[in-house]
Length: 385
Image 1 (cartoon, rainbow, N blue to C red):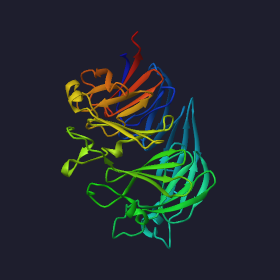
Image 2 (image 1 turned 30 degrees about the vertical axis):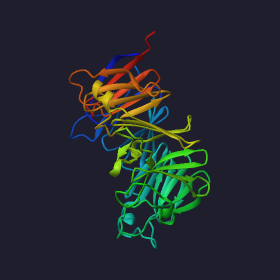
Image 3 (image 1 turned 90 degrees about the vertical axis):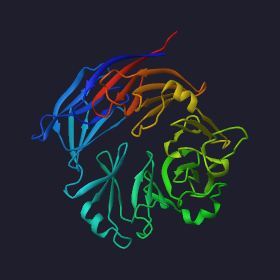
Image 4 (image 1 turned 180 degrees about the vertical axis):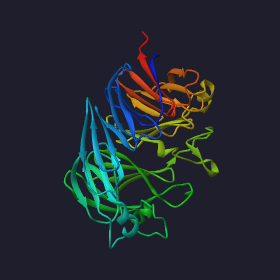
C-alpha cells in the first residue's frame, strides 16, 4: 500500500467540510471588513464545482452528500449546485445549543441564561433540517447522539456541578417520547473495581447503541452499558487482569493492577459488534457479545517507527475494516495501522511546510488531511500488488 498526493489546498479559515463523495466545501473570507465570503466546493480531484458568495458568520456542517450552513443561528442554507435558503426561527435571540447530523437544537438565549430552572425551563426547539419536529418544554440539556435517540440531562444541583451528566432521560426523536430516566446515584453500589477511583463518578459521552446495549465512557476509565429499552445497568467494566511478568496491562495503577486505558477515545463499531480504542501506545478491543477484552501495549514499536496518536485531539483517526487511518500531530505523519498484525501497513511523512495534521477522513480511495487550518492535503490510496 502506498499514498500519492493528489492536490493541496491552502486554507485561509477553519471552515472546511468533506462529504461522502469526497467533495470539499470551504468558506474563504473575502476581507476582514466584508461580511461576505466565498462558498467553494471542490471535487475529489480539486476542481471547483461551486463558487458563490456566502457569509462570514455561521456554522457549516455536512451530512452524507450535502453541505449545510446556518447563518446568524436561524437561517438555514442547503448547499449543493446552488444555495437554498430557509428561515427557521424569526426570533433573533434563538441560538443553536447543539447539532448532530441533520438535527439542530435551538434555545432562547435570554430564557436559558436567566430562568432555566426546574420550575421555569427553557424551551428546546428540535429541528431536523428545516423542519421543527419537537418543541420540548421540560427541564434539561439535550444532546443528540444518533439519528433516532437523544439524551436530556436533568441534573439540577448547582452546588455539585452545573455540568454533571449523571441523570438523564432517553428521548426517542421518531416517536417524540421519553423512554426512561436514569440516575447514576441509584447504581453506584454496582460500580465495582479493584482499583481506587480517582475522582467522583461522572457519565461521559455516549459511544452508541449495539442491539439492546447503550454504551457510555466514564470519567474513571470505565465503560458503562445500559439496556436501551429500560435504562437498566447491564455492565460496568474497568479492571483488567494483571499477568505476572507483564510490565503494562492497560494504565498501571497502585500495586501493579490496571484499568482499561483511554475509554474517552473509544469507538463503537456497529458492523463488528466491538468497541475499539487506538490511543497513544495502546490498542484494545471489547467484544460486545462475549464482553472479552483484548489489548496491546505497543510503546516499543510505536517509538521505533515514530508514529502514534499523541497530541491529536480533533479527528485523529478513522476505521475501515481491519485498517485504522490516523495522523500523528507530533511527528507530522499519516499512519495506516493493521488491527490484525498490530503493525503499520504504511507510514507517510507530510510534505515540508504543511503544518501539523489535526484530522483525517477517508472517502472512497482518498484520504483528506487537515493541517490545523493551514492546508488540506488529499491523497490517493494505491494498493501495491
